[in-house]
Image 1 (cartoon, one colour):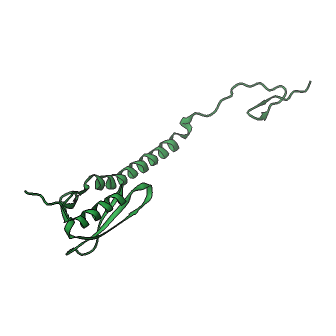
Image 2 (cartoon, rainbow, N blue to C red):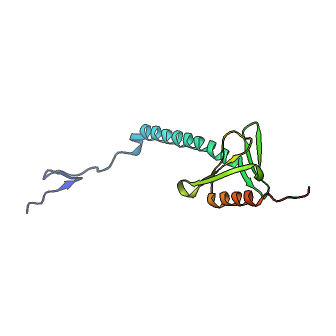
Image 3 (tube, rainbow, N blue to C red):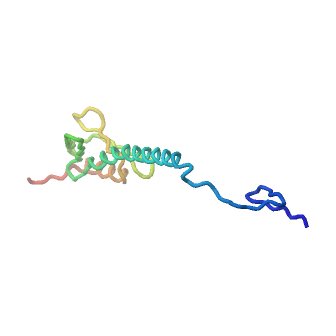
Length: 144
């Protein structure tokens, strides 16, 4: 009976005896593993740092639509800007949708150069329609 003996796909001689059969240790590639790990951590860390800036900008931006005005608050590291646009001064509005349901509302304000854009907001059509409706009805008058 001629049975060929093999180990790990290699044929053994007839009188050959296996004394050791093992794979090399991971320590053999320790430098490579550490290097790749460091590159991965640096890359992920750098990616997290890059993601921090849009996150912070979002956290420090607020759009508020009331019955009387549209308020845009934007903060940076040192300053906070609050712009108020009375509904009665808004001359036109439009809206649009973007990726993943976020959209924008754009409106023109009399006496203001260029359009004002509220970007990255949900329900942009509803917000635009509400502003438009308030414009046509007139802003609510309140006693202060």
